[in-house]
Amino acid sequence: MKKYLTRMRMRGTNKAILPYIMDRWKGFVRIRKLISYQLRYCENQCSNVRADLQRAFLKWKNDHEKLTSALGRLPRETLVEIGIRSTQQVGKCSEQLAENQSISNHLVLQRDEFLNYYIKG
Image (cartoon, rainbow, N blue to C red):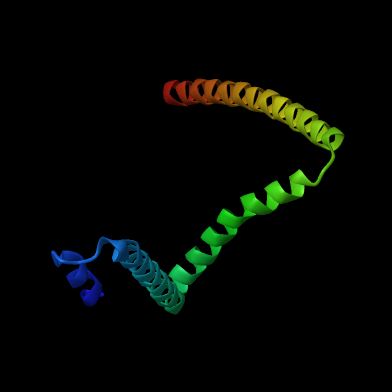
């Protein structure tokens, strides 16, 4: 790489070789990044915790692509049905959360009353 940089700095250099120099430089950078990625991957595989984290991250990262490709093959009517079912499930979950919140508030009030009764008694 030194050779290519030296040629670039020379004043009498033919400007026609500049694209070749830049292509070589890009190739050098590409290989360097690939090697650093591979070395980091190998280092992470040596540690149990990092290996598990790396596997979980890659699974999480690639699941979106798998889901996108699977949904892309489905017909439009099926996608509409899936959307309607998802909306209904979200509505049921929100109703259930509201009901759970009201039950929780009621239990907190009962606890406070029993606590006051215990303190007075």
